[in-house]
Amino acid sequence: MSSETAKSPPSGPKDGDFRLSNANLPRLPGQIRRPAYDRSDVTPGIVHLGIGAFHRAHQAVVIDDLLAGGATDWGIVGASLRSPETRDALAPQDCLYTLTVRSGAGTEHRIIGSVLACEVANEKPAPLIARLTHPATRIVSLTVTEKGYCHTPQTGDLDEHHPDIVHDLQNPGTPRSAIGFLVAALARRRIAGAAPFTVLSCDNLTANGHTVGRIVTQFAALRSRNLAKWIEAEVAFPSTMVDRIVPETTDLDRSEISSALGMTDAWPVVTEPFTQWIVEDRFPAGRPDFAAAGVQMVSDVTPFEHMKLRLLNASHSALAYLGYLAGHETIASTMTDLRFAAFARQVMQDAAPTLTMPEGTDIAAYSASLLQRFSNAALHHRTWQIAMDGSQKLPQRLLATMQDQLRLGLSIDTHALAVAGWMRYVTAKDEQGRAIDVRDPLAKELAEIAERAGPVAERLAPALLEVHSIFGALGSDPRMRSAVTEALSKLYALGARQTVQTFQPA
Image (tube, rainbow, N blue to C red; front, side, top):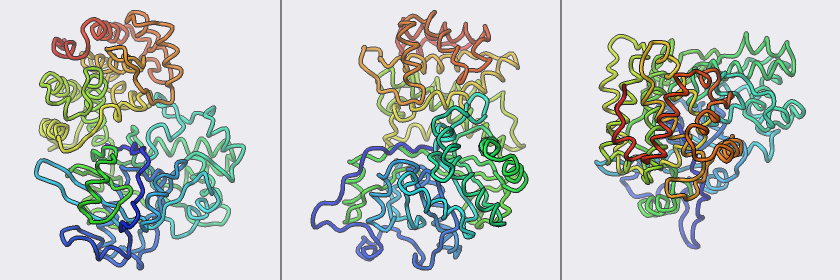
């Protein structure tokens, strides 16, 4: 699952310390795996928007493998849209960083060299647009999180009133949003008569390729109908499914990894052994041989995406909200309580009938593997981290399943409890009355609703269900209102731990 939340500023090296860099690669201990190619031979073919922890633990690792196989024209230029922290950490070390894989079997360190440069979009938009426009750029990939698409999650359409969209329409040469940068570069390519790049979303959006294609086209139409028609006809937006658990990097991680290297790495990434990438094979501008690095190339990613969103992401969010309320700091800690582990399993079982998978797909085995991954105590994956941006995540992870469950006449009780956990969480007060640091684009609006309704389920649940940008028409369904209100009432009366313990799906 994607995550771009390694937000704590990295500590710089101490005086006299060696810093990870091209020059210092020979100083690494022999057991540390390093790039198996000459980085000076690599040229960029991919620009990645949103160069956070997930990209560096997932797609950049695949490209690192492919570079080792000789695909040296597919290096990555990474760009943060706003924060300079990743650039400031990586630039002094030639954009090298450590991938640390942790499990019960031990820890492995590997140096990744596929990122050639790291830029900050809002500091100097022009060079980034120039890089996006360069003929060598054939793929532009994104991990900007759900909120980075400036859209309405419930409908999947562009939010024309989003401040960044308003700005980008007024200032097309100095955009702020990922959508603004994509359209600015595509417009220049069209004028120059150059072939467009392929846009490759790697975020947890339903039909992410179709969604970003629709948003980009809608934005372009506000600039020029002819530009929108060209994009619709010429630009490929393949959908993808990405999966790897990537917790935020802590100062303790940096210290331990730097000790293992014998030199300072200001911003390593920590992850699990499991990794999966499924991609629709639509790349008219060309692509590297992804399959050679273990990527599954398919004609339609939809069933795999639904399986991941509805089994992995839904249960992960349920554990995050309810586990946090019960006092658990991490997912692994939450899973040590068998009541929560059983509830996560039930969320998956209740979602499974809504899936239509290719023949041979073993949903039960996939679900069992997820429970094992959630229990990996070597990963410090915080419930608070997963709980971020819930207003953007709920429609894909929980609400779409609930719509199908209601259509099929199935119970929505487990998912209603997960939604109720989110509602209790966004009141910004935990079960002991302590403040919760709610990180969400709608945090202010949600806090105002909670303040007006008070801690009364019969008022709070209907009020939050009326937030149309999250719940749409589902929020007015009496079955939805009844199930969520009842679940929230139990949370207030019993607390998360006892509610999960006594919860019995219909």
